[in-house]
Image (tube, rainbow, N blue to C red; front, side):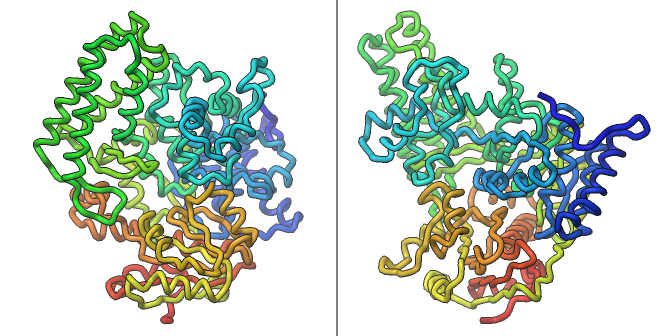
Length: 635
């Protein structure tokens, strides 16, 4: 149901005139009366967002930490959503940041209470954030692990019984199972191999129920950048297939931590071939009654697939990075081509098997969908096109990943060419007030921008120390700094770097340390904020985490966050005339600013930043010192 505007309209004023007046009343009169500090930067930002809505612009809104960005963009967004009758879409960098935004006492909750807005806020999380009943049943058949019993106990009664639709409700989010490790969750969550359309449990699926729920939002829909990109890429195909798009029609898009959108766009466009997934699919269709010809083709496919991955592994370029580059090998292309031909023939035989009903319908549909995607992905790999390929472990499964080099053309066509107001909001969108790097990587030609500083006096509340230290000694230096006390966030440039440190932590250490991935991230952050452990180690929390006061008093940055030497960034460097200046340095500078920005989140905050730097990192001090809010001291 469409909700009332938070201010009255009159015949003498347009909606935007009234919105302008309302924003002014809130920031100049109402909030100060309620004890809130008057912030010129926040007021300026909110008026600029109102202008972007009116003119339907792409706006880069860079506002320093402590500006109050969330309230600045939420006020005009909510009013415009109610005016248009379409919700505003708030897209966050990841699922953990979504939880931060909607947590009890957070900005949205506080705004709702301040102005009695009766906000309708709904979450649209990525599909892998939901329990898959099919995979859960499969996991129970393979294992008797205790965590599966825990999930079983939490399932609503209607999952295993017959109830009317009115008695069903959303369930099964990742955040509902905080004690599960990422590895455990990845045994039971949604996986692209699943054929949801053919699933006989679809009407009772938590993912389906959540989707039906958030599509009816009136004020705000909150999702991750990854899910927004998946929605954009699949929107037209879903319409052609008679399905509703993943997200509802919206009045505007706010990209919180919008500088990370490019990486989400690239991830959404990747195609994957996992070694073990093929074995799982074929095992389910090799049943009694299947024709001998079909069985022979399945066995031939398995043999070729196994050989393909064997040759693939032999052609990996040695690297410490998570993404392993693959060197050219004609044999690999020949096997891939033979695989495509064999799978094409197999798909033809599946038509006959379907007519004979020799394979259960769900398993056959799943296999057909899987092999169609398999051949499409393998075709991208064997063609000498503009794609980038690498091997990495996903959910502990070796996975061939194929991705287009650039996403700028697709983003320009599907996102930025429309008439939808789009706002990028972050403390770090520019390098020295220049937005060119971000605009170029996203294919944005026409945009407006502004940059306002943080209201904090950093010299009085923050100290930054630089530690000259050899790479092999960084782990012990982290432990020494942690032993000095204080709630400490340790930031790593990659998952591999974090895991290396984890192996180096003494087993008899008395310091309470938790690592990203050991359990659901938002619950880890919540426990850290409550002081239940002292040290949080992460490779993702460079941006967005908001822990004011004594909840965080020390940030340790283990390495300068230079982009990795992996196939994705190597491709960007290859097509740049000046890769250091155009690719590596802007990425590092933006990320470093984000990491440092975790420390001071309110006017009462204080603390230390520690940069652990090798000789090589110290030699380029002139390239990172100027992006720090205060000068770094030797220690």
